[in-house]
Length: 278
Image 1 (cartoon, rainbow, N blue to C red):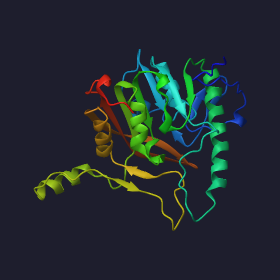
Image 2 (image 1 turned 90 degrees about the vertical axis):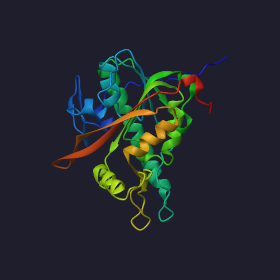
Image 3 (image 1 turned 135 degrees about the vertical axis):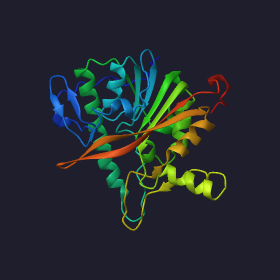
């Protein structure tokens, strides 16, 4: 009987021209490959200064692998989870244009991004494993992990809570969620408003981004607030959490922009065995 492995078979990729990189990466044997996001100086803050030595980590949305390989260098045993070109990403299905063609181009980009991961995997002599699939179908056969990371992916998902639920049912200790800070997020002002009005703090919310007038954005659904992320993960058994803020570099042509991010680090307080089965 033929047994199909959960983990993807490594690809031999050696040509940079076959790859798309999501993060700027310094690759042994190739030199510096620049891309739009450069986390090299801010990666510790990006990951909430968490400790990875001896931890089994499920990284959701590995892209070209920069964060995955960084955690591995810090002592993690990483299972990288991402789309392949066999799955469809959560693009916004605007009725105003034929988004099937956009999806086709998106799949080609994903294939090239997978190639970038495997090129780096070989260059770094990585031992990390890869599972391909959509975020709503994370297989339980991955087994328990100590840490799950969601780095700048929840805003690109139609159902961010379901994605968290699927991964956190496997997560024993810690969840790390990182994303852009909304320009409308001013926690101090919100607290002052609620104190002045002598009422309980309003429930955190999320902003729906797609605009049918402009048919943009095509891949970002939400602007999330860290307080909402804390609510999400609290429901899933991670009742203790903290939020930190930091800046990361975004390359826009010749400009280097410093954009503000938040990171939520949640700690499991409800034992994994007591969480309801899905």
